[in-house]
Length: 428
Image (tube, rainbow, N blue to C red; front, side):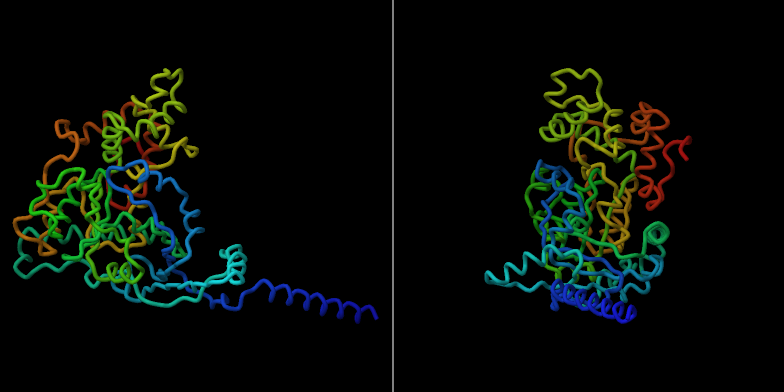
């Protein structure tokens, strides 16, 4: 008798559970198990950002990536089953899964959509499988006449930089499912004529690179003819996140993808000098006031009012504070975050320290006009000396050994991924 009651109770409990499951589950949204990959969310438009940020531009970077993912509805997936160091030969096996959300109308369906939004983290749409992010050319091939010239050594340097970058990604980045949002491609500029994708890294020659792209695109005859405001606020260059998923897929697969980077401490000091040691109607009131208020003891009313006069040590305190009074900014963010080199397989990696040589080699590889060379002029504060290693050391000498170490830890992945030496001997 007791056994019969127990069996009846189990059957009743199972029936109730099945009814609840059917009530909650939408049959349209039942999806097969998906392979690990990258989800590219297309629904939310990230505010445009630039080398020289305006209020609206930099506020967009302070939004939490997870919040953006929750607000977006279109997605694509790129599998990353293979170790990163094997992706150069087998990248064509990678794939994107685009999910297309049906558009629905009517009051009844709107009420269903409201219920669906509450369950959007649990239920996924059925994917469409297509390949992505494996350029036809790993690196533009040298011409026969170049193979015994100076270009050969530069070509080998590129191969070594890519090898180190891939090995670092393979060692430190998880192969589990990772999500790519519009943030990951919002910094990539598109030049369709010569089929170039350029990831913009502030304080690493980005202004002059955008001038070069404008000349290549036929928007100007010379880089000298393009003014600073035209470069940054003219909106003449297209960004990759401005295309639909097919346009993004096509360009990531077939265009030459390149980025230029800079020694992290030197890049940081350059940004500090530019934004806080010169009049600025955005960085002083937005960042300066918050930094002075939080980190300066007995700050004057004038400093609190204007936000001018931030000291480098105060700036570093802000940078290293996990509870920053104001969010991060593209000018001192990690290159690893700005350009996502472990998600996007860049074909060319240049360095600011060898800018002229690297830039002109890249222009040679893509077949740019011979009279086009990378401009040497300083875009902002041209009467001021460029930030050098010596100047960088002078700024960091103001910090304690602990602050220098924590700053190095903050940019550790950039140092490792791009093979920069430790800037101070006492760092570990």
